[in-house]
Amino acid sequence: MSKLLTVALVGLVVVLLLGRAYGGEVGENFPSSADIAEIFGKVLARKQSEANATRCELQLQEFFEGLVSLKEYWAIQMFDAWGKIPSGILSGNFYSLGDYDQCRKAASPPTSAGLIRGRYCQVSIPLSFLFSALGKQTGRGLPSRSRVPGLSIGSCLPDSCDASELKPLMDATLGVLLNTTNLGVTCDVPVPEVGTKEIVAIVIFSAVAALMVCSTAYDVFAAMTGRTARQAWAMFSVYSNGVKLFTIARRPAAGPLYVKSDQIDCLNGIRVLSMVWIVFCHNYMTIIMSTMSNAIGIYDWIKSYHSMLIVGGTVSVDSF
Image (spheres, rainbow, N blue to C red):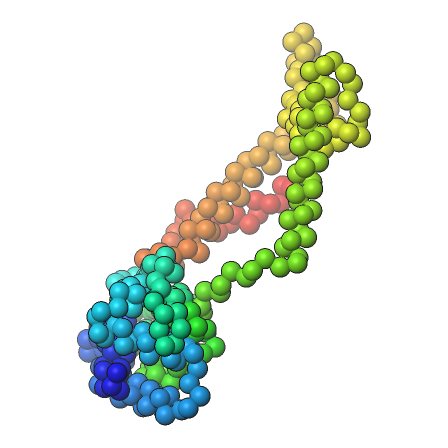
């Protein structure tokens, strides 16, 4: 494949990801297709001139060739799994995750660079330059740059590439165009094979499970035949231990209304209410930490009165 086609393809990919989505002063912060083609052309020309090309670079070349020809379904499948520029960035939608499952399923037939499978990666692009330009145009009090996450774009690349190889390429291209060195690249780590530690853990847990099954069978058999089970043999019995765990002591029907106790009963009720409060707060925290399209609204929500139920939830553990 000619260098011109490669440069054009890579330029197209980055244009689709970044795009000139905003006009005026903001749009000038995004790279144009000509800038992208020029920078990528220099980087790829240097890489192609090197004799010791890595397996990642060779598989990237195969991926680009298959995509440009539009005849390799696996290459189109990998490109389709990429995240695109999301809508509502100014509302806090900083994520375009792409399609993880589709990326993992993509696989090529044998090529000169070997079998190519998809690996899911995320590229984090800082948005400080964008918010700086918007602040000048609108005069709005935008959140501090340190509190604004980067734009996270999901990508699908050959599995021979890891974050350490992709980071220099991103810095030499997007980093130069955006005048930043804070680009982040994280890639999905393959599931390691079962090793000695895992085998030892499986054996130990299997032995405990076998003890529970045998002890429960003995305990149930003794109960059915009216015999008294030996405590040592029924130690791991699910039946006996379950009865002890879930037994509820009932108040005698003819007994007094109140029974003496060495506990302050109302504290148990307070702890129950505190547990409900804690679970309720944790549900909110899970939502806040997940991907959302209007995360910027959290700053306004924190200033509201009804958010105090969640923000002040840290004191709920004092009753324990």
